[in-house]
Image 1 (cartoon, rainbow, N blue to C red):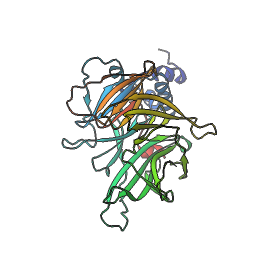
Image 2: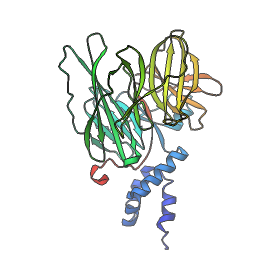
Image 3: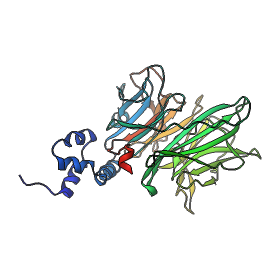
Image 4: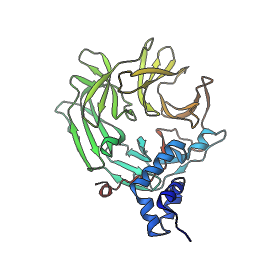
Length: 363
């Protein structure tokens, strides 16, 4: 039997799901070498991202669960979720926090946000990030809150985790904070200088990675709020101007959608707007309004993902409900229902991939 050239074989195999590729590694040594090759891993990932095949939705309740994204998009009935039994943080009494996904990897932590893992749910491989103590400032009655952001660093062929620790006083205001960045390539943490005279002010900071930076709303000594962008590749900060929103706002929520920074504004009038920051970091950077709707009693709205056609946006409401927003009809569809009776805490879309979390293989 004539053997196909590796270039042709790679183009054929990159169309397959990860589950099949893992089995095909046993065919021969040459197939094992091909499928394990970093160039093939990138080719497979690139095709999956372009075609949006092999896409799953991960949920945090009753542990960590997975649902095929196609079933979520076409759902009219109760959805059956699959519990991830190889979750390294699995515990019957505690939930797993999902801090974001990138290239088929999930960043997750335990309920205390101190044990942090990078998990590839397709290959079932994971790595626990080295423990790094929190340097609590010498101030009385402080509460410590940890937030994380996760993304790739294409400049250095690396994956980075940002840890933002906020210290709050009895009134709930930020008294101090610290910023550390983990490099998968180096398997180590590095502490960065803080943005002077600015303190993070709101609770939901995770999943706000866009353009190589993590973002949070901050309050300065003049009591004015701004959006701070921390570039985890360079350690530099900048302030992003607000969009031209209207009315009185009682909640800002920063997130990311389709690679863009998103800002959700909840007005006292019960109107909600979702904005996207386009042309990020360029001279033509601007805010574009994506969604305007009325929501009664809902306090927090977070966009999770676009539908495969791009015509709908999956929204997470108050950390407990998922619903599609139809961009063309400008209306909400029915809530997505799952067999579980518990509320959804975190949701993240994630591609299947062969990306490795093996530190030794990345050096």
